Amino acid sequence: MNYDEFADLYDHQYDVYRDDLHFYARVAEKVSGPVLEIGAGTGRVTAFLARRGVQVTGLEPSARMMERAQARAQRDGLELKIVQGDVRTFQLEKRFALAIAPFNALMHLYTPNEQLQALENVRAHLAPGAPFVFDLYVPRFGQMNTLRHEGETFHAPDGTRTDVFLIQRHDEPRQHITTEYFVDTTQPGGQLTRRHHTLTQRYYTRYEVEWLLRCAGFESPRVTGSFQGGPLEAGSDVMVFETRARP
Ligand SMILES: C[S@@+](CC[C@H](N)C(=O)[O-])C[C@H]1O[C@@H](n2cnc3c(N)ncnc32)[C@H](O)[C@@H]1O
Image (cartoon, rainbow, N blue to C red):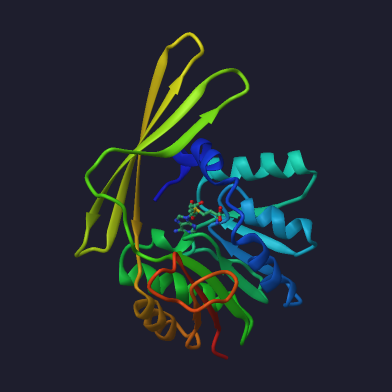
C-alpha cells in the first residue's frame, strides 16, 4: 500500500488526532534505549516522542509521507530520524529497546504470510524481552456502498475549501475494507478540482492477533480497549496490544 497519494490529505485528517500520543510517550519513557516506530507516516507520533527526548527511529515506506515528516521537523525545530523501508523487509543494524506501531500501521499487511514476515522481522530487531506495542481499530463499520460525508471539510488560509466524501466496501472473506475518497477542492472563484484515492486496510480480530504474535515469537499480549488501559469490550473503538519479544 503506497501512501504517497495520501500524504497531503493525511495531515488535514489526522494531525488533530491526539488520543494515543501520551500513551505512546509513557510506553517509550519506561524503556532506556532506542525506540523503533513502524509506519511513522508524517511523524505525528515520532515528533511527539522526539520532543520528549525519546531516541526514536521512524520506519516509513512512503517518500511523500517522509517529506511531510521532515517538513514537520523543520517547522518544530526538531531532528527526526526517519528511514525508508517496509516492515516486512527492513534491516537495521540496531537492536531496539521498544517497537511501536501506532494508529493501524499493521493494517497494510494483507495476508498471513505478510503479517508473519513483518512480525518476525520486528522481533529480530528487538532486544530479548523488549516490548512491542501497537493499536488497531475494532472492526465495526458505517454504512457500506454508500457515498458519505463525515464532516471532513477543511478551509485553507487562501480561501479554498476542501470536502472529503467517501464510500466503503467490505470484502468479508478477505477481511478487507476498501475506502474510496473523493477529495473536492473549491477555489474562492468556484472552480472545483476532484481527486480520487483508494485505501485498503486488512482488519484484525483480537484472537487472530494473539495467535500471530505467538507464532512470530512474542509473548501472549496484554490487550486493552483504550489508551487509558480499560478492558476491551463490545463498545471499544480500539484494541491496544502490549507484548514482548520472547528471549
Ligand atoms: C494510518 S498511517 C499511520 C501513520 C502514523 N503511525 C500515525 O500514527 O500518524 C499508516 C502508515 O503505515 C505505513 N505503512 C504502510 N505499509 C507499510 C509497510 N509495509 N511497512 C511499514 N509501514 C507501512 C503507511 O505508509 C502509513 O504511513
